[in-house]
Length: 195
Image 1: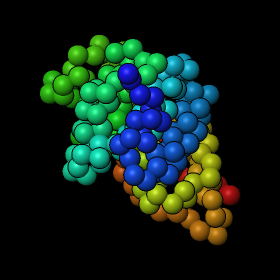
Image 2 (image 1 turned 180 degrees about the horizontal axis):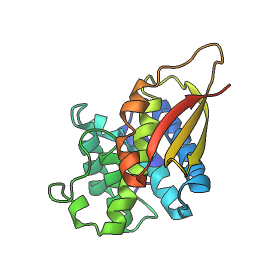
Image 3 (image 1 turned 120 degrees about the horizontal axis):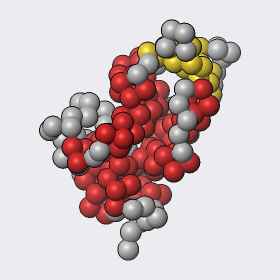
């Protein structure tokens, strides 16, 4: 019997606050991007939501290359309510939340996707990668994310509202992890704070 993402998270994870925070941030980014930059489907949102919950389950095996272990656990266990191809997509979204960028010549599973599926992985993994970077400290520093797309300059602006207005959080890891989002959506990302 296949597990749901929550059941798989409970089975393979010790601390569960980070995956839920990354899911919250990912959903805010997805919804903002969906409204301003690129329309995506509710099913694509579900793929991202499940990947956000499962992106770190690979720590169950080992911290080194945990993103690859997350992919393997998802492929080996499957996911309830998802078809085989969707499970492969979710596994790749998890795989690319850190580490090297997708490579259609080298990476198993990803290389079997068609062009549209590869683009979807880049976009959703790009969102997940930024959300994960923004919660690097695992202490819920960001209250709200608002997305604005400057079409004239092709810039996607991430307006971040900190949980504590007296403290500007360190978003270095979010900035470092914007590369895949920029590739997937063919845009430049800029982070800004707002009260």
